[in-house]
Length: 99
Image 1 (spheres, one colour):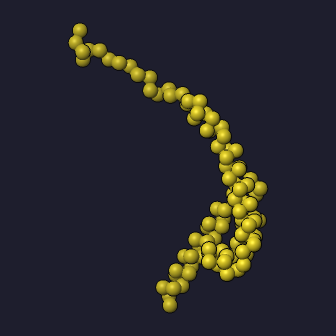
Image 2: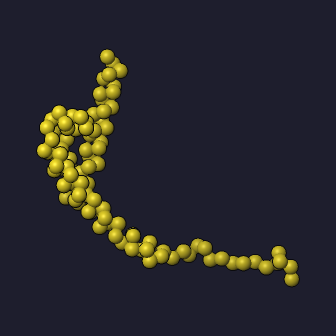
Image 3: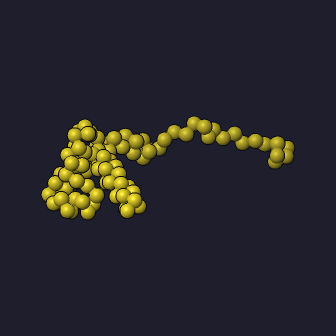
C-alpha cells in the first residue's frame, strides 16, 4: 500500500458550536438591550447641553426629541442621532461648496 492510496475523511461540514460560542450567541440579545438602555441614558444627558454645544456635535434639540419618538423602548435611539448628525454635516458641506 502506498501513501497516496490512503485517504483521510474529515467530517468538516458538521461543526458544532463550542460552549463559549453558544453562550455568546445566547447573551447577544441581552447585550444589545443593555447597550440601547445605556445609550438612552447618554442621550438624556445630552438634554443638559445648550444649543451651541449641541450644534458643535451636529445635533439639535429637535433631533434629540425625534430620536426618542422614532424608536421604541427596545430600539437604540443613537442610530437615529448618528444619521441626523451625518445628514446635517453633508448639508453643511454641500452649502459650503455652493458659496
